[in-house]
Amino acid sequence: MNLSLENKVALVTGASRGIGRSIARAMAESGADLIIASRKIADLETAASDIRQTGRKCLPVATHIGRLEEIKNLVERAMKEFGRIDILVNNAATNPSMASAMDIDNRAWDSIMNLNLKGLFFLSQSVARAMKEQSGGKIINVASVAGISPDILPVYSISKAGVIMATKVMAQQWAIYNIRVNAIAPSLTKTRFSEPLWSNQDILNIAMSRTPLARPAEPEDMVGAAIFLASDASNYITGQVIAVDGGMTI
Image (cartoon, helix red, strand yellow):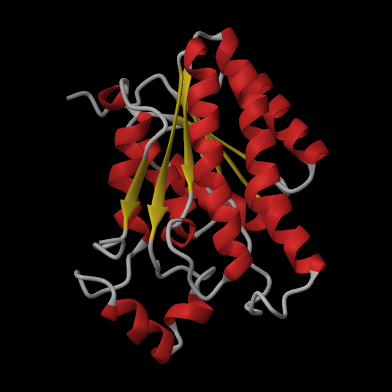
């Protein structure tokens, strides 16, 4: 089974920390050159320096995935630097509000949807156009178990359910171009993004009561599924969602 990413170029969003950074580093260790994106260039430079220690190239590009003009710049810079994109990992996400479905306002809705779903789709579309010209590629969307079963973050759950359907639509529509599109769905993972959840003992206790493996995930727990889906070992898999959740969805 070939899990090597030698001679591949991967673009990973939300890559300055957490799940995105772990996946980007692992892809470099597997042989890929990287383009990494997130909002803050200083954080990206730190991540890029770490990735370059593997001996692979790494281009950091400060990008707000919720802004279409910045998506365009990201893809143009990636293509100018490397001439191709073989793997796209859509990991960037936001959740600026923990308000209930009764209380959340349209500003928070727009912020979540613009980044988590709209930005993900249009970045995928832009990269898919490049992949079409190079006879294929792999797109990996980071969804969430919250998109499978709703949790305490209502609009985030809705956005991630949208990511799961977008994965299936893109897989169906772009298979003709040899573009394989799949998703991983993490459960509660110990990142800075989700710290308001796992640092709350009551929330953590509830989540762990629903998790057979009885611990929150670490960012590194997402690496294996991502490498598998990016590699040639998964060439006949498309439109699927792998729950990396310690058994929560069962």
